[in-house]
Picture 1 (tube, rainbow, N blue to C red):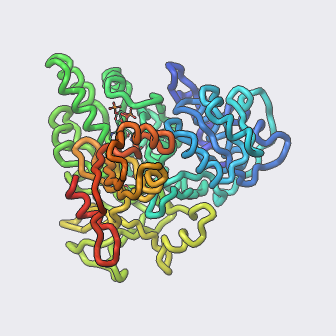
Picture 2 (cartoon, rainbow, N blue to C red):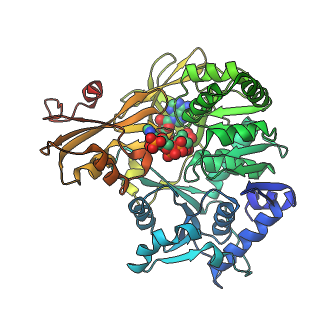
Amino acid sequence: MLELFEKAKLYKNRAAIVSDNTTYSYDDLITKSSVVAANLLNNTADLKEARIAFLVPPSFEYVAVQWGIWAAGGIAVPLCVQHPLPSMEYVIQDSGAMVIIVHEDFHELLKPLEANSNIEIRTLKEIFKNHSSVLPDLVPDRRAMMLYTSGTTNKPKGVVTTHAIIQSQITTLVDAWEWTKEDYILNILPLHHVHGIINVLSCALWSGACCEFHAKFSAKEVWSAILSGKMSLFMAVPTIYYKLIAFWEGEDKENQLQMSEAASGLRLMVSGSAALPVPVLEKWKSITGQTLLERYGMTEIGMGLSNSYRGERRPGYVGLPLPGVEMRLVDKDRNILDKDMPGEIEIKGPCVFKEYWRKEEATKKAFTKDGWFMTGDIAMLHDGMYKILGRDSVDIIKSGGYKISALEIEDVLRGHHDIDDCAVVGVEDEEWGEVVAACLLTSNKALDLNELSDWAKTKLPGYKIPRKYIIQNKLPRNVLGKVTKNKLKTLF
Ligand code: MCA
Ligand code: AMP
Protein backbone atom coordinates (compact mmCIF):
# COMPACT_ATOMS: atom_id res chain seq x y z
CA MET A 1 0.00 0.00 0.00
CA LEU A 2 1.16 3.56 -0.59
CA GLU A 3 2.92 5.08 2.39
CA LEU A 4 0.53 8.06 2.29
CA PHE A 5 -2.41 5.70 2.90
CA GLU A 6 -0.56 3.65 5.50
CA LYS A 7 0.14 6.79 7.47
CA ALA A 8 -3.44 7.96 7.18
CA LYS A 9 -4.63 4.67 8.67
CA LEU A 10 -2.53 5.35 11.74
CA TYR A 11 -3.96 8.87 12.17
CA LYS A 12 -7.43 7.29 12.55
CA ASN A 13 -9.90 9.76 13.99
CA ARG A 14 -7.68 12.83 13.91
CA ALA A 15 -9.12 15.72 11.91
CA ALA A 16 -7.85 15.54 8.31
CA ILE A 17 -10.05 17.98 6.40
CA VAL A 18 -12.37 20.82 7.25
CA SER A 19 -14.68 21.84 4.45
CA ASP A 20 -18.15 23.38 4.34
CA ASN A 21 -17.95 23.75 8.14
CA THR A 22 -17.66 19.98 8.59
CA THR A 23 -14.66 18.17 10.00
CA TYR A 24 -13.64 14.87 8.40
CA SER A 25 -11.23 12.43 10.03
CA TYR A 26 -8.51 10.32 8.42
CA ASP A 27 -10.82 7.31 8.89
CA ASP A 28 -13.53 9.17 6.95
CA LEU A 29 -11.05 9.82 4.18
CA ILE A 30 -9.89 6.18 3.98
CA THR A 31 -13.49 4.92 4.01
CA LYS A 32 -14.75 7.35 1.38
CA SER A 33 -11.79 6.97 -0.94
CA SER A 34 -12.10 3.16 -0.77
CA VAL A 35 -15.72 3.53 -1.89
CA VAL A 36 -14.62 5.74 -4.81
CA ALA A 37 -11.95 3.18 -5.72
CA ALA A 38 -14.44 0.29 -5.62
CA ASN A 39 -16.89 2.16 -7.83
CA LEU A 40 -14.16 3.04 -10.29
CA LEU A 41 -12.85 -0.53 -10.38
CA ASN A 42 -16.35 -1.84 -10.94
CA ASN A 43 -15.29 -5.45 -10.32
CA THR A 44 -12.03 -5.18 -12.28
CA ALA A 45 -8.72 -5.64 -10.45
CA ASP A 46 -6.82 -2.49 -11.32
CA LEU A 47 -7.34 0.72 -13.31
CA LYS A 48 -3.83 0.22 -14.71
CA GLU A 49 -3.03 3.91 -15.01
CA ALA A 50 -6.28 4.86 -16.71
CA ARG A 51 -6.60 8.65 -16.61
CA ILE A 52 -9.53 9.75 -14.49
CA ALA A 53 -10.38 13.43 -14.80
CA PHE A 54 -12.30 15.06 -11.98
CA LEU A 55 -14.05 18.36 -11.61
CA VAL A 56 -14.69 18.87 -7.91
CA PRO A 57 -14.27 22.13 -5.98
CA PRO A 58 -11.68 22.17 -3.18
CA SER A 59 -13.33 20.09 -0.44
CA PHE A 60 -13.29 16.78 1.40
CA GLU A 61 -14.93 15.27 -1.68
CA TYR A 62 -12.04 16.45 -3.88
CA VAL A 63 -9.54 14.59 -1.68
CA ALA A 64 -11.71 11.45 -1.43
CA VAL A 65 -11.88 11.33 -5.22
CA GLN A 66 -8.15 11.97 -5.67
CA TRP A 67 -7.25 9.23 -3.17
CA GLY A 68 -9.91 6.92 -4.63
CA ILE A 69 -8.36 7.22 -8.10
CA TRP A 70 -4.95 6.47 -6.63
CA ALA A 71 -6.21 3.53 -4.58
CA ALA A 72 -7.76 2.00 -7.72
CA GLY A 73 -4.51 2.33 -9.68
CA GLY A 74 -5.54 5.27 -11.85
CA ILE A 75 -3.90 8.57 -12.80
CA ALA A 76 -5.62 11.58 -11.23
CA VAL A 77 -6.22 14.46 -13.66
CA PRO A 78 -7.73 17.40 -11.75
CA LEU A 79 -9.77 19.89 -13.75
CA CYS A 80 -10.14 23.49 -12.63
CA VAL A 81 -13.60 24.65 -11.63
CA GLN A 82 -12.88 28.12 -12.98
CA HIS A 83 -12.04 26.96 -16.50
CA PRO A 84 -14.41 27.35 -19.43
CA LEU A 85 -15.42 24.18 -21.30
CA PRO A 86 -12.84 24.43 -24.12
CA SER A 87 -9.94 24.48 -21.59
CA MET A 88 -11.33 21.40 -19.86
CA GLU A 89 -12.06 19.69 -23.13
CA TYR A 90 -8.43 20.11 -24.13
CA VAL A 91 -7.19 18.47 -20.91
CA ILE A 92 -9.71 15.64 -21.18
CA GLN A 93 -8.82 14.92 -24.78
CA ASP A 94 -5.08 15.29 -24.35
CA SER A 95 -4.99 13.07 -21.27
CA GLY A 96 -7.23 10.50 -22.93
CA ALA A 97 -9.47 10.36 -19.85
CA MET A 98 -12.52 8.22 -20.56
CA VAL A 99 -14.11 8.80 -17.15
CA ILE A 100 -14.83 12.18 -15.60
CA ILE A 101 -16.00 12.47 -12.03
CA VAL A 102 -18.02 15.61 -11.59
CA HIS A 103 -19.57 17.54 -8.72
CA GLU A 104 -23.30 17.85 -9.41
CA ASP A 105 -23.02 21.66 -9.80
CA PHE A 106 -20.87 21.18 -12.91
CA HIS A 107 -22.66 18.24 -14.50
CA GLU A 108 -24.66 20.41 -16.88
CA LEU A 109 -21.50 22.17 -18.07
CA LEU A 110 -19.85 18.87 -19.06
CA LYS A 111 -22.88 17.24 -20.65
CA PRO A 112 -21.94 18.28 -24.23
CA LEU A 113 -18.79 16.15 -23.88
CA GLU A 114 -20.79 13.05 -23.07
CA ALA A 115 -23.10 13.55 -26.02
CA ASN A 116 -20.25 13.56 -28.57
CA SER A 117 -17.98 10.80 -27.31
CA ASN A 118 -17.58 7.60 -25.35
CA ILE A 119 -16.63 9.57 -22.28
CA GLU A 120 -18.45 8.48 -19.17
CA ILE A 121 -19.43 11.19 -16.70
CA ARG A 122 -20.02 10.04 -13.14
CA THR A 123 -21.44 12.34 -10.50
CA LEU A 124 -20.22 12.41 -6.91
CA LYS A 125 -23.48 10.83 -5.85
CA GLU A 126 -22.81 7.82 -8.08
CA ILE A 127 -19.15 7.50 -7.19
CA PHE A 128 -19.90 7.70 -3.46
CA LYS A 129 -22.51 4.90 -3.63
CA ASN A 130 -21.75 2.18 -1.12
CA HIS A 131 -19.51 -0.42 -2.68
CA SER A 132 -16.44 -2.35 -1.66
CA SER A 133 -13.66 -4.11 -3.49
CA VAL A 134 -10.22 -5.59 -3.06
CA LEU A 135 -7.81 -2.82 -3.98
CA PRO A 136 -4.76 -3.33 -6.17
CA ASP A 137 -1.27 -3.42 -4.76
CA LEU A 138 0.55 -0.36 -6.03
CA VAL A 139 4.25 0.00 -6.65
CA PRO A 140 5.62 3.54 -6.13
CA ASP A 141 6.80 3.80 -9.73
CA ARG A 142 3.25 3.86 -11.01
CA ARG A 143 2.08 7.04 -12.70
CA ALA A 144 -0.21 8.87 -10.26
CA MET A 145 -1.01 12.40 -11.36
CA MET A 146 -1.04 14.67 -14.35
CA LEU A 147 -1.05 18.46 -13.98
CA TYR A 148 -1.30 20.72 -17.01
CA THR A 149 1.22 23.50 -17.29
CA SER A 150 1.81 26.17 -19.89
CA GLY A 151 5.20 26.43 -21.51
CA THR A 152 6.87 27.72 -24.59
CA THR A 153 4.46 25.74 -26.76
CA ASN A 154 1.02 27.18 -27.34
CA LYS A 155 -0.94 24.40 -25.63
CA PRO A 156 -0.43 23.26 -22.02
CA LYS A 157 1.39 19.97 -21.47
CA GLY A 158 0.46 17.20 -19.03
CA VAL A 159 3.21 16.86 -16.42
CA VAL A 160 3.22 13.26 -15.21
CA THR A 161 4.39 12.31 -11.73
CA THR A 162 4.54 8.88 -10.10
CA HIS A 163 3.69 8.03 -6.50
CA ALA A 164 7.43 7.94 -5.74
CA ILE A 165 7.97 11.42 -7.21
CA ILE A 166 4.98 12.82 -5.30
CA GLN A 167 6.25 11.22 -2.11
CA SER A 168 9.66 12.76 -2.62
CA GLN A 169 8.11 16.20 -3.25
CA ILE A 170 6.09 15.87 -0.05
CA THR A 171 8.72 14.48 2.31
CA THR A 172 11.32 17.08 1.34
CA LEU A 173 8.96 19.83 2.44
CA VAL A 174 7.65 18.02 5.51
CA ASP A 175 11.25 17.74 6.75
CA ALA A 176 12.46 21.17 5.67
CA TRP A 177 9.52 23.06 7.15
CA GLU A 178 9.09 20.75 10.14
CA TRP A 179 5.47 19.71 9.65
CA THR A 180 3.88 17.80 12.55
CA LYS A 181 0.48 16.32 13.21
CA GLU A 182 -0.34 19.33 15.38
CA ASP A 183 -0.30 21.60 12.32
CA TYR A 184 -3.39 23.27 10.88
CA ILE A 185 -3.30 24.89 7.46
CA LEU A 186 -5.78 26.85 5.40
CA ASN A 187 -5.92 25.95 1.70
CA ILE A 188 -7.23 28.70 -0.54
CA LEU A 189 -5.24 27.76 -3.61
CA PRO A 190 -6.58 26.15 -6.77
CA LEU A 191 -6.29 22.36 -6.71
CA HIS A 192 -4.97 21.79 -10.23
CA HIS A 193 -1.44 22.93 -9.39
CA VAL A 194 1.45 21.71 -7.26
CA HIS A 195 1.29 24.60 -4.79
CA GLY A 196 -2.23 23.77 -3.55
CA ILE A 197 -2.04 19.99 -4.05
CA ILE A 198 1.44 19.10 -2.80
CA ASN A 199 2.78 21.92 -0.63
CA VAL A 200 -0.46 22.48 1.27
CA LEU A 201 -2.84 19.52 1.02
CA SER A 202 -0.52 16.55 0.68
CA CYS A 203 2.09 17.75 3.18
CA ALA A 204 -0.70 18.21 5.73
CA LEU A 205 -2.15 14.74 5.14
CA TRP A 206 1.26 13.08 5.15
CA SER A 207 1.90 14.63 8.56
CA GLY A 208 -1.45 13.83 10.19
CA ALA A 209 -2.24 17.55 10.27
CA CYS A 210 -5.52 19.26 9.36
CA CYS A 211 -6.23 21.08 6.09
CA GLU A 212 -9.16 23.50 5.97
CA PHE A 213 -10.54 24.39 2.54
CA HIS A 214 -12.11 27.58 1.34
CA ALA A 215 -13.49 26.95 -2.13
CA LYS A 216 -12.29 30.36 -3.30
CA PHE A 217 -9.86 32.97 -2.05
CA SER A 218 -11.36 35.87 -0.15
CA ALA A 219 -9.10 38.21 1.85
CA LYS A 220 -11.87 38.70 4.43
CA GLU A 221 -12.29 34.94 4.95
CA VAL A 222 -8.55 34.34 5.21
CA TRP A 223 -8.28 37.03 7.88
CA SER A 224 -11.23 35.46 9.74
CA ALA A 225 -9.45 32.11 9.67
CA ILE A 226 -6.26 33.73 10.96
CA LEU A 227 -8.29 35.43 13.70
CA SER A 228 -9.81 32.08 14.71
CA GLY A 229 -6.38 31.17 16.08
CA LYS A 230 -6.49 27.62 14.66
CA MET A 231 -3.90 28.03 11.92
CA SER A 232 -0.25 27.22 12.42
CA LEU A 233 0.81 27.51 8.77
CA PHE A 234 -0.18 29.47 5.69
CA MET A 235 1.09 29.29 2.11
CA ALA A 236 0.18 31.53 -0.80
CA VAL A 237 1.32 33.37 -3.90
CA PRO A 238 2.62 36.97 -3.59
CA THR A 239 -0.63 38.41 -5.04
CA ILE A 240 -2.54 36.93 -2.12
CA TYR A 241 -0.22 38.56 0.43
CA TYR A 242 -0.67 41.81 -1.48
CA LYS A 243 -4.45 41.46 -1.20
CA LEU A 244 -4.26 40.52 2.50
CA ILE A 245 -2.20 43.65 3.16
CA ALA A 246 -4.71 45.80 1.24
CA PHE A 247 -7.56 44.36 3.31
CA TRP A 248 -5.69 44.98 6.59
CA GLU A 249 -5.04 48.57 5.53
CA GLY A 250 -8.76 49.11 5.04
CA GLU A 251 -9.60 48.16 8.65
CA ASP A 252 -9.75 50.44 11.70
CA LYS A 253 -6.88 50.55 14.20
CA GLU A 254 -8.49 48.20 16.71
CA ASN A 255 -9.18 45.49 14.12
CA GLN A 256 -5.73 45.92 12.67
CA LEU A 257 -4.20 45.26 16.08
CA GLN A 258 -6.20 42.07 16.52
CA MET A 259 -5.41 40.87 13.01
CA SER A 260 -1.70 41.55 13.44
CA GLU A 261 -1.63 39.82 16.81
CA ALA A 262 -3.38 36.73 15.40
CA ALA A 263 -1.10 36.53 12.34
CA SER A 264 2.01 36.81 14.48
CA GLY A 265 1.07 33.53 16.17
CA LEU A 266 1.48 31.29 13.12
CA ARG A 267 4.65 29.22 13.11
CA LEU A 268 5.31 29.63 9.37
CA MET A 269 4.08 31.64 6.40
CA VAL A 270 5.41 30.76 2.96
CA SER A 271 5.34 32.59 -0.37
CA GLY A 272 6.01 31.11 -3.78
CA SER A 273 4.96 30.42 -7.38
CA ALA A 274 6.22 33.87 -8.40
CA ALA A 275 8.80 36.38 -7.23
CA LEU A 276 7.90 37.92 -3.88
CA PRO A 277 8.47 41.68 -4.18
CA VAL A 278 10.65 42.89 -1.32
CA PRO A 279 8.17 45.72 -0.43
CA VAL A 280 5.44 43.07 0.06
CA LEU A 281 7.73 40.99 2.28
CA GLU A 282 8.63 44.10 4.30
CA LYS A 283 5.08 45.33 4.65
CA TRP A 284 3.87 41.89 5.73
CA LYS A 285 6.65 41.79 8.31
CA SER A 286 5.77 45.22 9.61
CA ILE A 287 2.10 44.32 10.14
CA THR A 288 2.44 40.71 11.34
CA GLY A 289 6.01 40.31 12.54
CA GLN A 290 6.28 37.34 10.15
CA THR A 291 9.21 37.07 7.76
CA LEU A 292 7.73 35.24 4.79
CA LEU A 293 9.72 32.19 3.77
CA GLU A 294 10.19 32.40 0.00
CA ARG A 295 10.82 29.26 -1.98
CA TYR A 296 11.14 28.38 -5.67
CA GLY A 297 9.39 25.56 -7.48
CA MET A 298 7.91 24.41 -10.75
CA THR A 299 5.23 21.93 -11.77
CA GLU A 300 7.94 19.73 -13.29
CA ILE A 301 10.09 19.57 -10.14
CA GLY A 302 7.90 20.31 -7.14
CA MET A 303 10.00 22.55 -4.88
CA GLY A 304 13.65 23.14 -5.71
CA LEU A 305 15.00 25.89 -3.51
CA SER A 306 13.93 27.31 -0.20
CA ASN A 307 14.92 29.87 2.35
CA SER A 308 15.59 28.37 5.74
CA TYR A 309 12.92 27.53 8.29
CA ARG A 310 15.22 28.14 11.24
CA GLY A 311 18.06 30.16 9.69
CA GLU A 312 18.30 33.16 7.42
CA ARG A 313 15.38 34.23 5.20
CA ARG A 314 16.89 36.76 2.84
CA PRO A 315 14.51 39.22 1.12
CA GLY A 316 14.61 38.88 -2.68
CA TYR A 317 16.33 35.47 -2.53
CA VAL A 318 15.00 31.91 -2.72
CA GLY A 319 17.63 30.30 -0.50
CA LEU A 320 19.36 27.02 -1.25
CA PRO A 321 18.48 23.66 -2.85
CA LEU A 322 16.21 21.55 -0.67
CA PRO A 323 17.64 18.24 0.60
CA GLY A 324 17.67 15.67 -2.20
CA VAL A 325 17.56 18.33 -4.92
CA GLU A 326 20.65 18.67 -7.09
CA MET A 327 21.00 21.99 -8.80
CA ARG A 328 23.46 23.83 -11.04
CA LEU A 329 23.58 27.03 -13.06
CA VAL A 330 24.71 26.90 -16.68
CA ASP A 331 25.38 29.34 -19.49
CA LYS A 332 23.86 29.16 -22.98
CA ASP A 333 26.40 26.49 -24.00
CA ARG A 334 25.52 24.47 -20.89
CA ASN A 335 28.84 25.17 -19.17
CA ILE A 336 28.55 25.11 -15.40
CA LEU A 337 28.87 28.58 -13.90
CA ASP A 338 30.58 29.90 -10.83
CA LYS A 339 29.03 32.13 -8.19
CA ASP A 340 27.97 35.67 -9.08
CA MET A 341 27.28 34.64 -12.68
CA PRO A 342 23.71 34.56 -13.97
CA GLY A 343 22.70 31.27 -15.58
CA GLU A 344 19.85 28.86 -16.18
CA ILE A 345 18.77 26.61 -13.32
CA GLU A 346 19.08 22.90 -14.02
CA ILE A 347 17.63 20.39 -11.59
CA LYS A 348 18.09 16.68 -10.91
CA GLY A 349 16.62 14.48 -8.21
CA PRO A 350 13.77 12.18 -7.16
CA CYS A 351 11.35 15.11 -7.20
CA VAL A 352 11.63 15.64 -10.97
CA PHE A 353 8.64 14.65 -13.15
CA LYS A 354 8.58 11.52 -15.29
CA GLU A 355 7.46 12.88 -18.65
CA TYR A 356 5.16 15.19 -20.56
CA TRP A 357 2.17 13.03 -21.34
CA ARG A 358 2.46 11.52 -24.79
CA LYS A 359 5.04 14.13 -25.79
CA GLU A 360 8.21 12.16 -26.15
CA GLU A 361 9.99 14.84 -28.15
CA ALA A 362 9.08 17.62 -25.70
CA THR A 363 10.21 15.43 -22.79
CA LYS A 364 13.53 14.71 -24.47
CA LYS A 365 14.05 18.39 -25.23
CA ALA A 366 13.43 19.33 -21.60
CA PHE A 367 16.41 17.35 -20.31
CA THR A 368 20.15 17.51 -21.04
CA LYS A 369 21.80 14.34 -22.31
CA ASP A 370 22.98 13.57 -18.78
CA GLY A 371 19.51 13.94 -17.28
CA TRP A 372 19.32 17.49 -15.93
CA PHE A 373 15.93 19.18 -16.25
CA MET A 374 16.30 22.59 -17.86
CA THR A 375 13.96 24.97 -16.04
CA GLY A 376 14.28 28.05 -18.25
CA ASP A 377 14.63 30.16 -15.10
CA ILE A 378 17.68 32.38 -14.69
CA ALA A 379 19.31 32.69 -11.28
CA MET A 380 22.55 33.74 -9.63
CA LEU A 381 24.40 32.55 -6.54
CA HIS A 382 25.34 35.59 -4.53
CA ASP A 383 26.77 35.66 -1.04
CA GLY A 384 25.81 32.02 -0.44
CA MET A 385 22.20 32.18 -1.64
CA TYR A 386 20.30 32.00 -4.89
CA LYS A 387 18.36 34.84 -6.39
CA ILE A 388 15.93 34.37 -9.29
CA LEU A 389 16.63 36.94 -12.01
CA GLY A 390 13.91 36.07 -14.52
CA ARG A 391 13.12 33.66 -17.31
CA ASP A 392 14.83 32.95 -20.59
CA SER A 393 11.53 33.19 -22.51
CA VAL A 394 9.41 36.31 -22.99
CA ASP A 395 6.53 34.04 -23.99
CA ILE A 396 5.94 32.86 -20.45
CA ILE A 397 3.94 35.15 -18.21
CA LYS A 398 3.36 34.79 -14.47
CA SER A 399 0.19 36.49 -13.28
CA GLY A 400 -1.27 35.97 -9.82
CA GLY A 401 1.04 32.94 -9.52
CA TYR A 402 -0.41 31.31 -12.64
CA LYS A 403 1.92 30.43 -15.49
CA ILE A 404 0.53 31.57 -18.81
CA SER A 405 1.76 31.03 -22.36
CA ALA A 406 1.62 34.18 -24.49
CA LEU A 407 1.45 31.93 -27.57
CA GLU A 408 -1.72 30.21 -26.37
CA ILE A 409 -3.48 33.56 -25.95
CA GLU A 410 -2.25 34.82 -29.32
CA ASP A 411 -3.62 31.67 -30.94
CA VAL A 412 -7.04 32.25 -29.42
CA LEU A 413 -7.13 35.98 -30.24
CA ARG A 414 -6.19 35.30 -33.88
CA GLY A 415 -9.30 33.13 -34.04
CA HIS A 416 -11.51 36.22 -33.57
CA HIS A 417 -12.91 37.52 -36.86
CA ASP A 418 -11.78 41.11 -36.17
CA ILE A 419 -8.18 40.30 -35.28
CA ASP A 420 -5.74 40.24 -38.20
CA ASP A 421 -2.70 39.60 -36.02
CA CYS A 422 -1.57 40.12 -32.45
CA ALA A 423 1.26 39.72 -29.95
CA VAL A 424 0.89 39.08 -26.23
CA VAL A 425 3.33 40.01 -23.48
CA GLY A 426 3.43 40.20 -19.68
CA VAL A 427 3.60 43.72 -18.29
CA GLU A 428 4.94 44.30 -14.78
CA ASP A 429 2.29 44.91 -12.16
CA GLU A 430 2.54 45.55 -8.42
CA GLU A 431 -0.45 43.39 -7.49
CA TRP A 432 -0.36 40.56 -10.07
CA GLY A 433 3.38 40.33 -10.74
CA GLU A 434 2.59 40.63 -14.41
CA VAL A 435 -0.64 41.30 -16.25
CA VAL A 436 -1.44 39.92 -19.68
CA ALA A 437 -1.25 42.63 -22.37
CA ALA A 438 -2.17 42.25 -26.04
CA CYS A 439 -1.17 44.34 -29.03
CA LEU A 440 -3.78 43.94 -31.75
CA LEU A 441 -3.87 44.57 -35.49
CA THR A 442 -7.42 45.05 -36.69
CA SER A 443 -9.20 46.66 -39.57
CA ASN A 444 -12.31 47.18 -37.47
CA LYS A 445 -12.02 50.79 -36.29
CA ALA A 446 -14.95 50.24 -33.90
CA LEU A 447 -13.59 47.09 -32.24
CA ASP A 448 -15.16 46.79 -28.78
CA LEU A 449 -12.44 45.54 -26.41
CA ASN A 450 -14.89 44.56 -23.68
CA GLU A 451 -16.70 42.38 -26.17
CA LEU A 452 -13.39 40.90 -27.25
CA SER A 453 -12.58 40.05 -23.61
CA ASP A 454 -16.01 38.50 -23.09
CA TRP A 455 -15.50 36.41 -26.20
CA ALA A 456 -12.03 35.32 -24.99
CA LYS A 457 -13.55 34.29 -21.65
CA THR A 458 -15.53 31.60 -23.43
CA LYS A 459 -12.25 30.09 -24.64
CA LEU A 460 -9.75 30.75 -21.87
CA PRO A 461 -9.69 30.80 -18.04
CA GLY A 462 -10.19 34.25 -16.49
CA TYR A 463 -6.56 34.66 -15.48
CA LYS A 464 -5.43 34.32 -19.12
CA ILE A 465 -7.62 37.16 -20.42
CA PRO A 466 -5.66 40.27 -21.44
CA ARG A 467 -6.10 43.17 -19.01
CA LYS A 468 -4.45 45.72 -21.30
CA TYR A 469 -4.83 46.23 -25.02
CA ILE A 470 -3.23 48.50 -27.58
CA ILE A 471 -4.13 48.69 -31.24
CA GLN A 472 -1.30 49.26 -33.74
CA ASN A 473 -0.85 49.27 -37.51
CA LYS A 474 2.00 46.81 -37.31
CA LEU A 475 3.90 44.73 -34.77
CA PRO A 476 7.52 45.64 -33.94
CA ARG A 477 9.74 43.04 -35.62
CA ASN A 478 13.48 42.41 -35.96
CA VAL A 479 15.30 41.84 -39.25
CA LEU A 480 14.33 38.17 -39.17
CA GLY A 481 10.66 39.13 -38.92
CA LYS A 482 10.30 37.99 -35.31
CA VAL A 483 8.15 40.16 -33.04
CA THR A 484 10.42 42.02 -30.61
CA LYS A 485 8.45 41.46 -27.44
CA ASN A 486 10.74 43.42 -25.15
CA LYS A 487 10.20 46.44 -27.38
CA LEU A 488 6.48 45.73 -27.40
CA LYS A 489 6.41 45.78 -23.60
CA THR A 490 7.62 49.37 -23.62
CA LEU A 491 4.53 50.39 -25.63
CA PHE A 492 2.29 49.49 -22.69
C1 MCA B 1 -8.15 37.83 -11.72
N1 MCA B 1 -8.19 39.17 -11.98
C2 MCA B 1 -7.04 39.52 -12.56
C3 MCA B 1 -6.28 38.34 -12.66
N2 MCA B 1 -7.00 37.32 -12.12
N3 MCA B 1 -6.59 40.70 -13.01
C4 MCA B 1 -5.36 40.73 -13.55
N4 MCA B 1 -4.58 39.64 -13.67
C5 MCA B 1 -4.99 38.44 -13.22
N5 MCA B 1 -4.19 37.38 -13.33
C6 MCA B 1 -9.28 40.08 -11.69
C7 MCA B 1 -10.60 39.58 -12.18
O1 MCA B 1 -10.81 39.97 -13.51
C8 MCA B 1 -11.55 40.27 -11.25
O2 MCA B 1 -11.68 41.62 -11.64
C9 MCA B 1 -10.80 40.25 -9.94
O3 MCA B 1 -9.42 40.15 -10.28
C10 MCA B 1 -11.16 39.06 -9.08
O4 MCA B 1 -11.12 37.90 -9.89
P1 MCA B 1 -11.07 36.46 -9.28
O5 MCA B 1 -11.01 35.45 -10.34
O6 MCA B 1 -12.11 36.38 -8.22
O7 MCA B 1 -9.65 36.54 -8.65
P2 MCA B 1 -9.16 36.04 -7.28
O8 MCA B 1 -9.93 34.87 -6.83
O9 MCA B 1 -9.01 37.20 -6.34
O10 MCA B 1 -7.75 35.47 -7.77
C11 MCA B 1 -6.58 35.93 -7.36
C12 MCA B 1 -5.75 34.77 -6.86
C13 MCA B 1 -5.66 33.70 -7.98
C14 MCA B 1 -6.38 34.14 -5.63
C15 MCA B 1 -4.39 35.31 -6.53
O11 MCA B 1 -5.03 34.28 -9.09
C16 MCA B 1 -4.98 32.46 -7.53
O12 MCA B 1 -5.56 31.57 -6.90
N6 MCA B 1 -3.65 32.34 -7.81
C17 MCA B 1 -2.86 31.19 -7.39
C18 MCA B 1 -2.41 30.40 -8.56
C19 MCA B 1 -1.58 29.22 -8.12
O13 MCA B 1 -1.86 28.50 -7.18
N7 MCA B 1 -0.49 29.02 -8.83
C20 MCA B 1 0.42 27.94 -8.50
C21 MCA B 1 0.99 27.43 -9.80
P3 MCA B 1 -13.07 42.41 -11.57
O14 MCA B 1 -13.37 42.40 -10.09
O15 MCA B 1 -12.73 43.76 -12.12
O16 MCA B 1 -13.99 41.58 -12.37
S1 MCA B 1 2.70 27.41 -9.70
C22 MCA B 1 3.10 26.01 -8.94
O17 MCA B 1 2.30 25.20 -8.51
C23 MCA B 1 4.59 25.92 -8.77
C24 MCA B 1 4.98 24.50 -8.58
C25 MCA B 1 5.02 26.74 -7.56
O18 MCA B 1 6.18 27.15 -7.52
O19 MCA B 1 4.20 26.91 -6.69
P1 AMP C 1 4.51 26.54 -12.77
O1 AMP C 1 4.99 26.00 -14.03
O2 AMP C 1 3.15 27.10 -12.80
O3 AMP C 1 4.75 25.49 -11.81
O4 AMP C 1 5.42 27.76 -12.42
C1 AMP C 1 6.77 27.59 -12.16
C2 AMP C 1 7.49 28.88 -12.39
O5 AMP C 1 7.13 29.85 -11.42
C3 AMP C 1 8.97 28.75 -12.26
O6 AMP C 1 9.55 28.22 -13.42
C4 AMP C 1 9.39 30.18 -11.97
O7 AMP C 1 9.47 30.91 -13.17
C5 AMP C 1 8.22 30.72 -11.18
N1 AMP C 1 8.49 30.75 -9.73
C6 AMP C 1 8.12 29.87 -8.78
N2 AMP C 1 8.54 30.28 -7.57
C7 AMP C 1 9.21 31.44 -7.77
C8 AMP C 1 9.89 32.37 -6.91
N3 AMP C 1 9.94 32.21 -5.60
N4 AMP C 1 10.46 33.44 -7.49
C9 AMP C 1 10.42 33.65 -8.82
N5 AMP C 1 9.78 32.82 -9.66
C10 AMP C 1 9.18 31.73 -9.14
